[in-house]
Length: 108
Image (cartoon, rainbow, N blue to C red; front, side):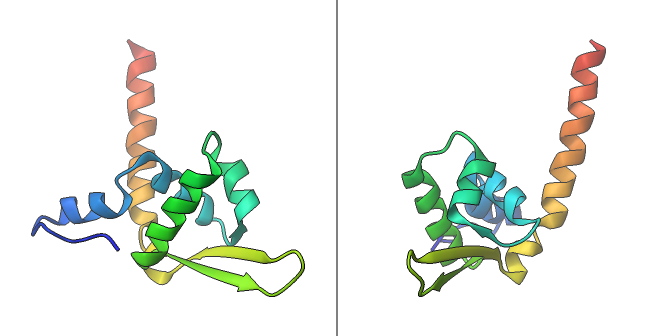
């Protein structure tokens, strides 16, 4: 679980989603529940080890829920929790800013 060591809300947010992979995992899960393989494909150039580690951290922080189905082979699905879904506005703001920045760079 991420430790909250600062009174600054921006630092708190960054401690939860402040790496490249977590943002992309959130983006992928915003569209709905995904299996591990679907996430790996959607995220792109990420190793299985790094994806697993990030998903475990996000689960411990209450952003993602993991459901294991007792099937052969076992099936595992990941879904955003209500807290994870509440980051939608943060991702939207980042997307809008990124689009504006891309346009600015193209115009130069």
